Length: 220
Image (cartoon, rainbow, N blue to C red; front, side, top):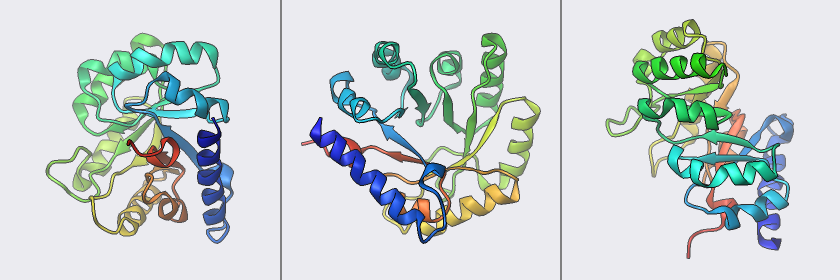
């Protein structure tokens, strides 16, 4: 408990520290604790320390552990931050409060259909392939304007943009580009920044940061 609480306090203090020179309020930044690969007993100490927003990569893994945790803590918000297969859209809409990986027309169609069926609109971030990497998910930069138009037309709530910069490179230029793209399209939500670079992301306008290792500790 002490470990989880002190790690959470450290991350929150870092966010507050970076917000000052950026003239932002810490309350503008949603800290998503990335709980993928961690089981309920590992997650519970963070919940006890006051963390209420969690992120999972896979629908199946989330289904296995979160219903019981959320029954005990109904105020918890669950975000899907990993790639989503179209055939899992219904399950994702039923389980998650936000989806950060909307990146292609087929998934948009599946999510819109699932939301209509469930009578529930789940805010979605459009994931942008910010580094133009062939192996990575995300909407290609050139397709972004048309895709955002399609999302709006499908009545899927558009929360903002999300990106994962290329590994082993300076993240700042990619975060700055995402912020510019969001501003160009009238979007305020920016899901960017992980354990190694969340301070840079906050400095450049992140509204949602996805932090795992800095909160759960590294695996021994």
